[in-house]
Length: 233
Length: 300
Image 1 (cartoon, chains in turn yellow, orange):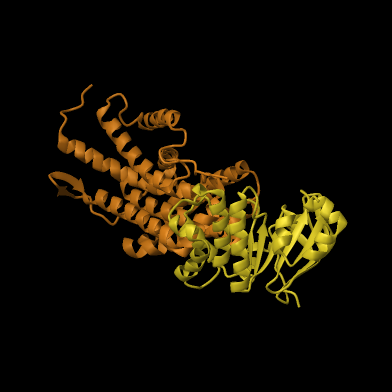
Image 2: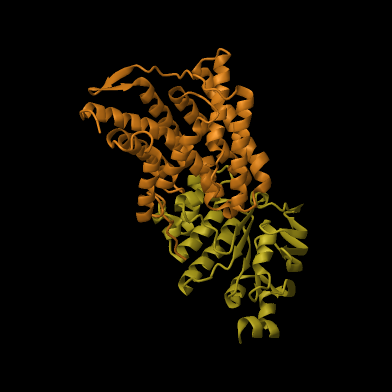
């Protein structure tokens, strides 16, 4: 059975419907990518899961119906790194990490050490205001913040956006390690389809709020229309 | 103009009196800032809330309780009342435009003011404070025990709050909910309750300010109205977004207007408020964000 299952999930912003019945699954310890053009509903899919946008339809997480309130989904074991990373730019790196572990009882120091093992840069910036970090460091902090909660599922929105290729490599390498060492599942939205397919086991392609193609990364790479529209060769 | 001879002893006394005034403004300004930071709303009912809780203290003491027995009870009532006001009055209009909420706080002020007149009558009442008015020598300057007590209690509360906000998990969550509610929800913080808690803390600050100043100025339903104006001025002076600014702004304002009132003859006690506002206007022309209101650095 899958860790996360969406069945016919719909979401709207005021009168505008952004998702028209999306169904997808994420298995235990699996990294799944969501691809698609701007406005296809990728970000909204993540927000519908974490409850930061109103949704209808069924979302089952770890065998249970998932609440629609973001506080509750966070406590259920879902960490959402939203568009724009969602770090607390006025607060220090350390305070951001403390907040990441807010819903847990674990020892903050110990948990933070885990994050610093993944991203040693963050330890040097411990007392710095998060808003003054470079883009790459902010993305690391966003991931670190999520990691503090020891989530079963990580929802990751455009981790490569605006980052130098080298930094993107570091981020995705860390993601792979988190997946294996923490047994964490990842649902990642990514503009860069080549990058996403290189790391994902499976992927879904969204178009105007519908899933139009799904399959393993290999299948998608072989798909003529996916190749032309998203991979560009 | 007759000023009398200038003596350093008197100057020191005036500064001390200014600090005492300022400590009251600081407490109330901090209450305003705490609510403003989390909701972008200026709470015009802050003064009336404070006076209301002071009346409760007066009633308790009238029933034979000592000040220091009544004190924690009143703080608990203030906290509960603040939380209740947020949940019952503010919550339903949470997503309304700021102006709507501001008008609601104005209405709340009028309502509380009327309620006080109905329950306790409009007359001024003597409020027996916990500190004696006799003076002791600090250095060689005679300062009243009451002034020292007011400053110690007010500043003590501020320090306690600073420790709470900085070092506790709940305090951190309160700050996080104020600066970034969306992300706060994503880490599992119940933002709605944090706002209510903020109102509770603000009400406690007001209650302390009220109980400290009532022995000095007499208690009546309008007791806090001028003081609230000074507190607004102090909050703006410090930068509406900065708790530290509110405290520094309050003390600075208290000292400045006390000295102006004493040593600049044409200002006296009647022109103190306009003079204070004038100074703030000038300062804001130079530093639009207030003394401590800096914009957070952000890199993308």
